[in-house]
Amino acid sequence: MAEAELLASGVQTAARSVPEQAELVFGLPSYAAGEQGRELIVRLAEATALINASAALILPQSLEVEPVLGLPAIALQSTAAESNALPWLASFLQMRSIARAAMSLQAKSCVILGPDAYHLSAGAIAAFAEPILKSEFDLAMPRYPLRPAEGLLNRGILYPLTRSLYGKRVHFQLPMDAVLTQPMMRLIGEPPNSKTAGSLPWLSVEAAVAGLRICEVPLAVHHQPRTDGADLTAVLASVLGPLFQEMETHASFWQRSRGSVEVPQRPNAVWPETKNESIDAQRMIESFMLGSRNLQEIWSLVLPPVTLFELKKLARLPAEQFHMADSLWVRIVYDFALAHRLRTINRAHIFGALTPLYLGWAASYALEIGATTSAVADARTEKLAAAFEADKSYLLSRWRWPDRFNP
Amino acid sequence: MSWDQILQALRESTQRVLLDITQLLPGVLALIIVVAIFWGLASLCAWGVRRIMRAARADERINRGMGEWASSQNPSEVVARIVFWVLMIVGILFGVSLFSEASPQSPLAAQLVAYVPGVVTAVILLFGGSVVARFLARSVLISGVNMNLHYARILSLGVKWLVLVLTAAMVLEHLAIGGVIVVLAFGILFGGIVLALALAVGLGSRDLVSRSLEREVARSTPDAIEEHVHHF
Image 1 (tube, rainbow over the protein chains, first blue to last red):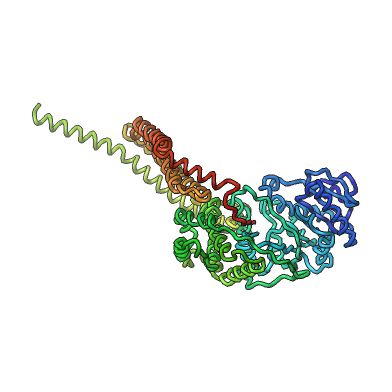
Image 2 (cartoon, chains in turn red, orange):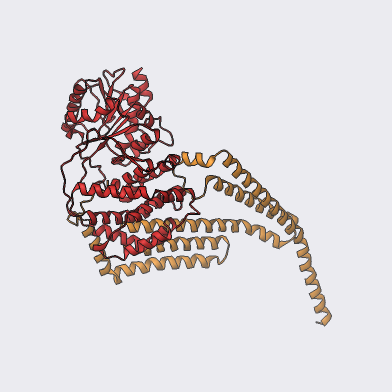
């Protein structure tokens, strides 16, 4: 079956020995040949030996696929959406193709690893896959050791918003690594259609909505997506656009969901404390001020008068006292999600109008955490997430009655 | 010329005008009736389309299928409006054609019929121009602000008025108002703005522009302030 089904699912087979069935599949969307690539393959072979399972590799199409160290390999054919995506988004988009290929191989589990996974030991890779191989969970999400000034988009919007909506405290919403079981592969590996083509795989959201079991596994790796030179507005649009779209799709689910629960950690993450370098927030504040002077007319189409008044007060503060309250930021995010749904302004403009506000929040966060440790920053993120949960009723009211409820 | 002759001339001209108006009346009546019928038909069709699309849950399906539906209105509302206005335009054109046929001898009717296509085009141009002007102004303003340009608002206003003036010139040309004067005035105005800007930048604001450019270059150099922030 293997060759025919794989070709049908857009996967090219390697010249040699594609197994009829692999218990475990390693998907490496960002794999690059070379010393680091070989190092990673060696680790995977060692991890496979530790796990004692039959395994196969799924690699990008651009590489000459050769079975390495006894691991049979197949090549992924990029879809049009993956080829046309921003370079740093392609890896996320390929998760869907990898899940499809893994399903064709009838794999029981699929381990997807990002570009810097060669830093991981074989033991760490095996530990990452373990909760899934033991059938304890359907999705293993990584928990990375972030420094305070890293992953600001995740800290400020992705984590708190998804936690308040879907009720699961999964700390990284767009990870480059994940372990999936068959039900999870089926969820994200649906044949491409107008809805899924080019859309980011929100793994924990899909799993939460489908009622699958999620766990977090500490993964001591430091991925830095290659967003250098990418316009911040484009980054926001490419990440938040699909997330807001997901909100519309699953509106009936999150409107019923209340509060949030921790997801089990296997094992508990204990990272060495990393201290932050002091951040100069001046330019971010300037960007916010410039937006405040010029974009009031556009913001007034999205934000209610109370929020606009608070923003005006904020713009009058001197730089050293600049502080955006959590409640204000929460409502801004909720109102922009609503504007995206109602198409209050053109969607091409929504994220451009949000950019100065996001920079304002980032500046406020940077000034607040200063040169602190990652533990302090994580606690601050949790506090913000709690504010998102506390004000969820505001989103519900505005989502259900956008015309009647406009404070 | 005697007083009787003057009265005779006045009587004859009044009779001619009244005759012209009488000849126009059936056409005007036909125009009003046809437009009214098409208005009713358009309203009925729009209502039907809206009901059918809502019954078929077309809004949800289109929204699901097209993640980037760009209008703030529901798809069913947009389709219903398109149906309404297409039927209304057809009705007006049909009415005008009836008006022309019902009053074949009237030169006024012929002129009116010849003028209608220009008016329709002008209305469409005016609507399209104002939509494009607003969209471009917002795009320029948002992009300018996000590029930290302090003159983003002026740039945005410039783009908006440029498009509006261009639209106004095109509309006046289609309405055959002003003729060559509009084209000339637009050319002079447009050329004048460009020349004024060139002179302002080249002479008056040379130092200001160079200082601004130097500031921008200094900002983008690698040695500039490093924020140590990673958004992703």
